[in-house]
Amino acid sequence: MKIIGHQKQIDMLNSATEKNRVHSAYLFVGQSGLGKKQVALKFAQMLNCQNTQDFKKPCGECLSCKKIEKFTHPDVITITVQEEKNSIAIEQIREMIKGLQFSAVMGGYNVRIIDDAHLMQRDAANSLLKILEEPPKNTVIVLITPVPKSLPSTVISRCAVVYFGILTDDEIKNEIKKYNLSSDEVEIINSIAMGSLGSAVKLAENRENISDCKNIISDFQNGKFLNKKFKERKEAVDLLNMLTARIRIERPEKLEDVLRMKNYITRNTNIGLTFEVLKNNLKQ
Ligand SMILES: [Zn+2]
Image 1 (cartoon, rainbow, N blue to C red):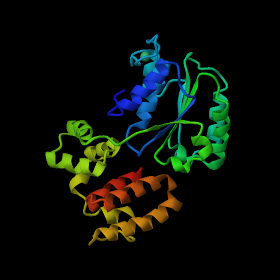
Image 2 (image 1 turned 90 degrees about the vertical axis):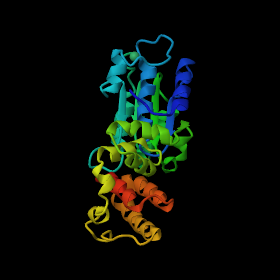
Image 3 (image 1 turned 120 degrees about the vertical axis):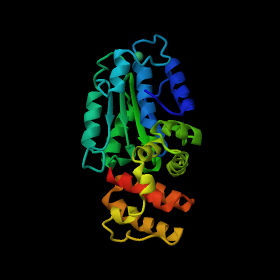
């Protein structure tokens, strides 16, 4: 499992595992596309690797490490928003808690990763609280979110919080090298991705988006109010303010993406290209 950056966070988790001082709940905080989930899976490998007697670096070769990488490990399960839903329901958390009553099938740790944890419904979060208060033995729950404030403070206070920073320009540029982009394209992608490898890779994989950004705006909401060029930055920000209100109601799971794009546009990124990234995010 290749992880770009975040060495400090990985070292910290390694050290906790090595010293047998693992918390029962972690909260991974940082914007989308940084690789927080990859780090959570790596952590699950540290906890479950069959080849390290002293719980140091996971080997990546044993059955346990491989199953985690392929998302088929019976004791390492990710919970997230189900398709065509926009929140994590209480039933999902209840089922998770039920599963944690049994010890790990493969003898290591039971690890549950709750991705986009801020999208838990309130009753789901309350239900989670119970297990955070009385965690079963050899269980680690990792909550992942870009917006921790959306979680109840009672949940946050039960977690060890790990912050993830954005990646450096060099880390991003290095990673998109393999897409054979021109140096101009690399610079553009890097300036739009703003430290998010996920965003950079998406753009690199769809390079036509880099040059073809003329019709972005008309594309993305049936031309209702986006079919125009912005004369000034403020116009684009105003539009995103409008969009924010709609998104909050219609697609709350995308709110964070919209807010981030608004932030970029306010900070002098290329308006057209930033909208392209947003459009792609909204399509998913
Ligand atoms: Zn291993």
